[in-house]
Image (cartoon, rainbow over all chains, first blue to last red):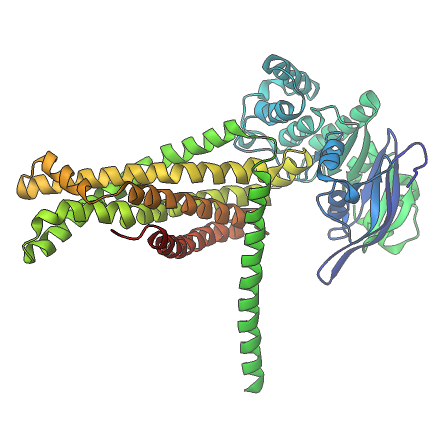
Length: 247
Length: 266
């Protein structure tokens, strides 16, 4: 499929079921280059399944995801690995490797993919940690970090290879409002300073307000409404109205 | 009444079919090992780390098991053989029992308990905390990094740990002999190894590589397929120990039968 020039991620009629549970029922949306696309929706609406399908952690039943005109589920293992090197992923839980220190979490990926020497890897790790304003945490274990610090270290790991696309799965879940703001501002900085294209899965309105260039509301496995965040806020769709009122 | 019977039959069918499906899934999971073991990347450093984990953390347990086997077997066989006036045969009986069967199987069962639970719980908790997905999206090949390394480490370390347990068992047996009958160590060890063949030693110690493969593969499989939370991780660890222990005993029967076919006793 040929994409509109500035569309980096295109999702078309995506379906995914688990047994009788039809989670995605024909999702279609685009993410434009250098923008933050926010996907919102209630629990169990299929947000996490959508983002996992985009990076090939799950295979769609039908429809497809195109990243830079490459159909993700049709890529060979080697091609998918190459594509994944250009995609960073921030997991809801952070998913830091808990037997490694913060520095090792970052260095581990560089060691396997960058061809850097040990000294270069150390410098790169410190550069990213300083960018995250957490250089003093390099030798800490993930269990010694607070929730907000874990998210920022996980984000540091996601950008250590300088990807041009970032996927955020609930980046602010479980954080206090100050940490929500800190993490959200990092997402904006990544877009502004590195022109990173992002998809942010969230149900946190504060985060969405800070980061969203475009917003999409997913309900019962389909995109119920797309537009700017203020357009979504003004939507007549009863579920979207309830969502915004209760948040 | 009829509905109860139908429900019972449905349950029995689903348990049997579920078991068959899971075994098929395990075989598929294990078959990926033979394809991927020849593919890059070669995780040499991680294999050595895993071997060190197995060796250093299981040493005391295996050594104690070996020593207990040797002492108890020596005590038991001495009294039994004395009834037939064949006490002199004790060292060779001890060596044959330890090297051919009891050493390899008991050491492997002990290691299955120690490692099976550890691997199942470690990989299971990595699964539920999305660390395996994190490896996957970073193009780090979790099967290579987590499964291949542990399976290769177990294939190499099980025979080494078994040899160690066997030697400690023989030392325990000798210690018991010294205490009971003041037997000279040259007589003891000459008698012990006189009846052994090199093929016995190689096959019966080498079969623990198969047991190591089983323990690591079953435990990785159980850990990889955990769905849920901490309770399911605990269940996976327990199932890894139970299933790998059962499969060790089953594999032992097959290996012994095959070895008797190809290397019949003289």
